[in-house]
Amino acid sequence: MPESVAVTGGNGRVGQHVLEHLTAQGYRTINLSRGKREEDHSDAYVRTDLLDAGEVYGALAQSDADAVVHLGMIPTPDHTPGYRTYESNVLSSYHVLEAAGELGIDRVTLASSFSAIGGGFEPEPITVDYLPVDEDHRLTPSNPYAMGKQVLEVTADGFARRSADAPGTITSLRFPWVVDDDTAQKTFVEADRTLAGLRNSDHFHTQRNTLCGYVHATDAVTLVEAAIEASFDGHERLWVSAPDTSAETPSAELATELYPEADYRGPAADDENPYTALIDTSKAEQLLDWEPTWSWRQLV
Image 1 (cartoon, rainbow, N blue to C red):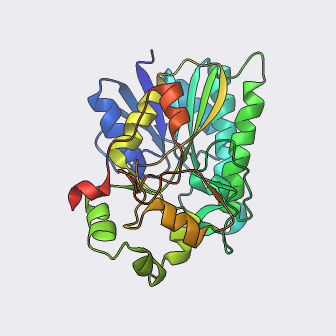
Image 2 (image 1 turned 180 degrees about the vertical axis):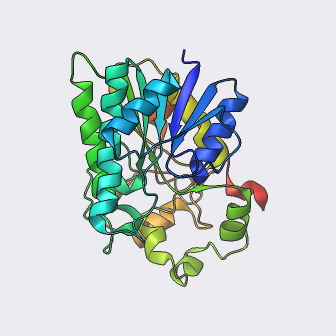
Image 3 (image 1 turned 120 degrees about the vertical axis):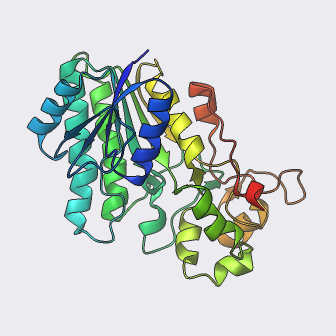
């Protein structure tokens, strides 16, 4: 099992949660980020430009890490040109995978995204063939952020095919929006989360295009830990989600109203748990023994 974990982008919101958790679990942690240090959880900090192959190699060599969690990418495409967003997702991932392979680091976890399917930054409604979506669902992204997430997964496939100089275990985690208690309280509990309320929201298009998905930071970090401890061979993609949607409308009704062309395979509206997520995380449960437990409804 790894004892030392390098986390790229540890200055970021999710990165800080990951560093805090891994450090508390007894791992030696190293934050590889650009700019000044903005957290106090990691055991070491190495300033690193993740778009520079030499810097990535040097930083990982200096870190003496057993595993890498690569989160250090542009988190949204709102404030950067499309090519910069795409470059951040794709090139940084290539550099991390290449350096890890050369240095004998056998486990790499990549921050893919719900956006690999298209997601919240698509200008048009995303394509949904069936619900809940799983890892076999087709990917149809068109925006730079989403395309970059799909390509980083394809890049990981390529490294997994190598017989040498590549990490043995690569996991791409398709994260939805990661929330904490305060964000969930404000966004979910204090808002109208019925279908009517969602339709009247300024963020309705985004909510629809992300299947009303989310995950709490406490579940996200335990999944990251499970991924760096995994020992399967090759590259695996995993959907990530809370156990429920962010809506106060049964999932069956959401599917009928918002995705009428999709084949709905979830629970009925009168089921004991009618709000089940429209994202299937059973592969993560089978492969990594991980199940999400945190729901925003517990704050109500």
